[in-house]
Image 1 (cartoon, rainbow, N blue to C red):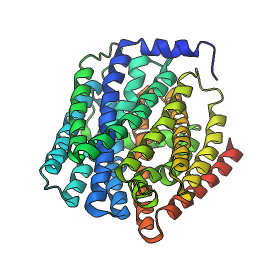
Image 2 (cartoon, one colour; image 1 turned 30 degrees about the horizontal axis):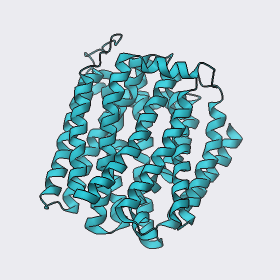
Image 3 (cartoon, rainbow, N blue to C red; image 1 turned 120 degrees about the vertical axis):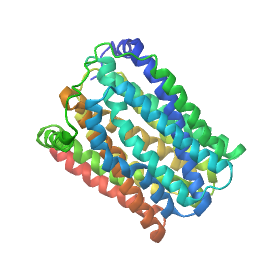
Image 4 (cartoon, rainbow, N blue to C red; image 1 turned 30 degrees about the vertical axis):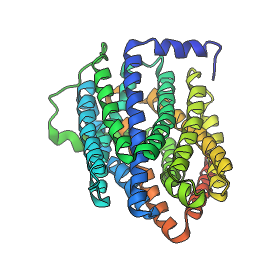
Length: 404
């Protein structure tokens, strides 16, 4: 529940130097990531004009997280987070540079783009658990919920700035410069990480043999399965990630085929979703504790289902923008609540692994959903699969209402 000192909580969280420096670099990196994602999505559409390929490309971006994220979580519990994070960002910048150079030279093909996006997805599978689990080390338990919400605000604002910047760069100079910006954004993040110091960080034991990694992964899965509060959250997370989030990966098709606005329409749709998400994160950043968050999550599952269905049912662009903003708000509220409840209760010894499982479901499941919706859209059009996903989310709301 919110308190009168909620604004002070946000201010005190931002006054922590380590968290502030980390967030500055992370925000620029996230802007670059979204700039590249919109650029890759539009480049895929230019090369193929196929909604199926849009789904395949999103699948290649996110599916490695399903396979590799648990391993990334184990390494997050074993390695120094700052050193590992810097290394992963350098690798990601190199892959972005490869995509940009091939695009600028005019020799990029859909097959090569697919391979590079797949490789970058593998890097992100190790990167994401660190980005999520490091927050606790930067701020501690007292400011954890506020830090997660502020992090979500930065992520949401990057979803506004990144697509808007991508739209400008693509319309004025093409896709190559849009992806090139991602390389510079990653360099900024690497520099910012040099100003982050984990004063209370306890280095994990480096004596664990590599053969114990599979056991450690299974140990993390058993922890989540047996935890009374985590299992229902996983059900909510998986359902929404499969049937609600993937409609974002079809925005290029909606912008071109349904609304007839091309790259500008894509940038507007993605940015409006980011605006809604930013408002949701800002509201939750003013909360202290977790009281009342479960009921709020159940309510916004219904809001999410209605918003996605309304988006799929219309061909009026301004109305679709409003639906997109509402969906962005609801997705962020649900996501921040899930993260807050998970991280507030998890043991430090398995924090990286639990974070990796969250990332695996939150990022990996939309890959399956995007592939499914993209394939179905090739047969039935763009709107029907998205509407079907909304109906399934309505069923989730009915289940959650009975189980709250």
